Image (cartoon, rainbow, N blue to C red; front, top):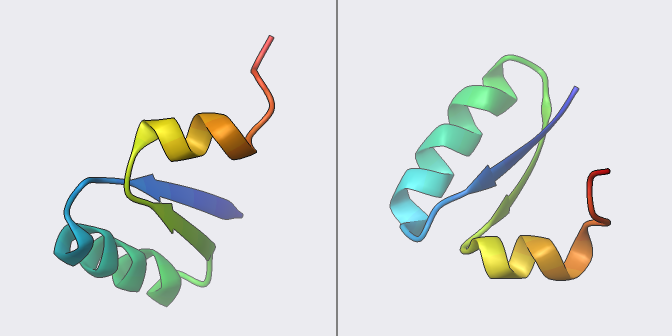
Length: 44
C-alpha cells in the first residue's frame, strides 16, 4: 500500500513515516497540500 503523508512539520512527517514504514507500506511525504496538488491528478 502507498501512503502519502502531508504535514507542515518535518518532525511529524518523519515520525509518521517511520511508523507507516514499519508496517511495510511505501511512504511518500510532502510539506503542504499545495505541493500535493501540483503532482497528483485531480480525483473525480
